[in-house]
Amino acid sequence: MSQTIQAIRGMNDILPDEAELWERFDDAVRGWLRAYGYRPIRMPIVEPTPLFARAIGEVTDIVEKEMYSFVDALNGEALTLRPEGTASCVRAVLQHSLLHAGPQRLWYAGPMFRHERPQKGRYRQFHQFGVEAFGYAGPDIDAEQIVMCARLWDELALSGIRLEINSLGSTEERQRHRAELIAYLECHREALDADARRRLHSNPLRILDSKNPHLQELIEGAPKLMDFLGEASLEHFAGVQALLKEAGVPYRINPRLVRGLDYYNLTVFEWITDKLGAQGTVCAGGRYDGLIGQLGGKPAPACGFAMGVERLIALLREEQGGVAVQAARAEPDVYVVHQGAEALAPAFRAAEDLRGAGFDVLWHCGGGSFKSQMKRADASGAQVAVIIGDDEAREGSASLKPLREDAAQRRVPLERLAEAIGDYFFGDEEDGNV
Ligand code: HAM
Image (cartoon, rainbow, N blue to C red):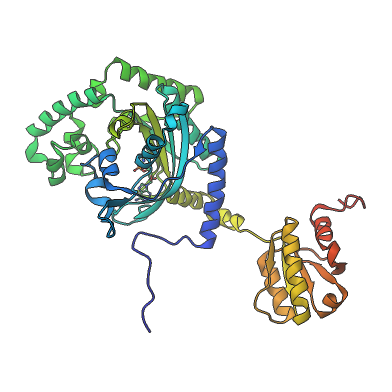
């Protein structure tokens, strides 16, 4: 027998138990986004490769080695499966001149692709909810985005997600810091590892983010970007912090938080948990005031973040165990049991009529004895079984059997079936039997 084909490493199937939990998570997130005035936008999964090289930066892990890029065999175009959503979102906003209508608060969701080494919490296809605000320059939107995350953790009953923030200042401030940083690292060139040496002139800021324990002392002593920030940058950062304090959202300033994408300036932030091992960042983002101009648009300020859905779902499971998953199971209201050639058509029609009346109905497929069908009905989690056999079919009726309580089965004319089930679920007010 030939071997079955497996999914690509690092790209996962999300099976029904898990997918139902995802849906519940999606519903909660959508409601939360609405509450903050964010509107949905959907972008393609494949984009022209230069979009990401220009937006994320040529000398980043993502662009250097993690993109699923290919040449379209039909027209020779260089294409890439999106590794993140911000670049696509900015492209869409510019392409459709959305900013002509004023500032925009937008969100998107869906799969992203990075050719990373798969491990727990790190996948090659993963999912994000991304949130982007365009046209707002003040620190209030940075703070609002951070505070809204805090609210979501509360709403999802997730605890222990800590907030780290930093300011990356302006381009000029970063350039002055960069020159001093390179000079400092040059003086210690022999102590650098291969990765750091390679990045020394291309992306020295990322060296500060190195996890190599041998570099930590060197990094500690390096010139700090914070010391290069001018008045306006410091004021913006102070403004964000004041509003976080106002909202009672605790944070830690991490001067080494630099992010792995090049488009950021001023505020950057990450939400981190210790409960998921090495891949503990569940949400991250910041301001990127230069990106719109860099991608050819009329410069406008921007600020956003993205949440890793796999990581947040893992955290939900970690904190709530199987309970969340069980609760997520979608149970039908009604299970339709039918037997005999004569019963097929009326039972099929009854199931459709009940759906038309607003009930979730599971139709029994595949025949079998009444006993085995009733077993399935019971296992489905449905509240009531509607049973139509030859007798009922001849009579134009159905038997209604409550499955979750010890109540008698009764016959109901088919034209009164929806009403009778409604009475069962919502009580018969006329009889005072609510
Ligand atoms: P990012 O930090 O690259 O930022 O990704 C955001 C989040 O996506 C991470 O914190 C993590 O939860 C999740 N994530 C990233 N890579 C993986 C992976 N390989 N497997 C599982 N989860 C992953 C961005 O993507 C920016 N576009 C965020 C942003 C929006 N900044 C401004 N606006």
